[in-house]
Length: 448
Image 1 (tube, rainbow, N blue to C red):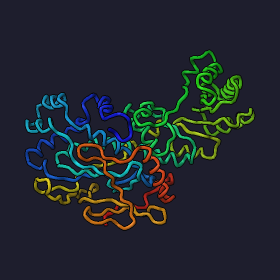
Image 2 (image 1 turned 120 degrees about the horizontal axis):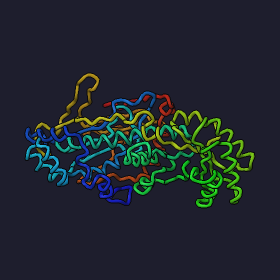
Image 3 (image 1 turned 90 degrees about the vertical axis):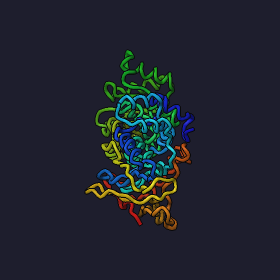
Image 4 (image 1 turned 135 degrees about the vertical axis):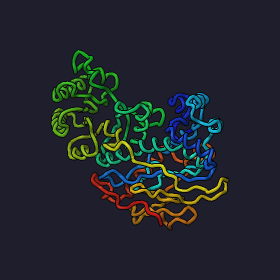
């Protein structure tokens, strides 16, 4: 069972077409495995790593998100009869491969950074220890999960910093693929967002949900005031009234009038258009002048971390963030790559792996199996070091890898709520200059 949801893995399988996750891959993973089975290297022990070579310009850190989701998907990584039949129909694979896939289950070990932890260039965010052939099949699934979730979480953390304690609502579900929307809501909650509009994220991951009405609700009523009255009668005075369907000043007047007739002041108003800075100031003045000092102001409309920061000195109580969140605020992928770093030279469960590495210009990799540690000095992160796997780590450093998958099942020991608290703690370990909106990493992962 998943560590963070009441649904067993079959809940995901239903959304994946009822056949698991094994064909969420690229063709060349399967063609390589076919050839590797024939050459004999498929059964050799191997280690793969996932890392980002660099961060987007202006960012001092990235946020790890998605390993918990990935663990559940690895448990479903098997080939259903219909999938085997599809592969047969292509007429390009050997009988040996097809027989191998009929009984395939991923039986390796996976280690990852904890969800909510931070990464810098070169951080081995995920390590996969398994047969070379099994590791080949996982690449696309691993990268699709981590590249999306880490991109969203990294952007969302910057937005959370910029909001400086003000309420944040994730509301980008209509701006991306339906499953990506659920994952984005989860990633935003992980790093500090308060709620999501996505109901599937609410049931699947227990993320708190929020939402009231859209412009269509107002347009469907005979007039704006009757729409507000209907909403308050249904949901109480604490509901949020959308006041910019027509003209904002008049919309606020009508919201105040509707709420007054029903016993008080609106809990909140939302402004989704116009000059948000100017409109927020005018709205606050009007609300206060009418005795609605407690009414909160929420704004939305293509917000990103830079726009949220620009609005920091204005009387705004909350932000609804949609499009820019689900596309990683201009960086829709985290740029993670999945690389072989060690492989045995002979088959056998106890054969040692030896380092292998690419040397191609601009895409060179580091070889060898390592364990990552973060060095904290006086409460601040100052370095990230990679230690050969059979050597002790630095004293007083924090080990970064935790178990994710072993013995054919998820092994991740934390809940999403645990990781949310953890993230807020480790983000506070970063030097202030790494958290600025125009920042660079002060350190990169380096091998001792």
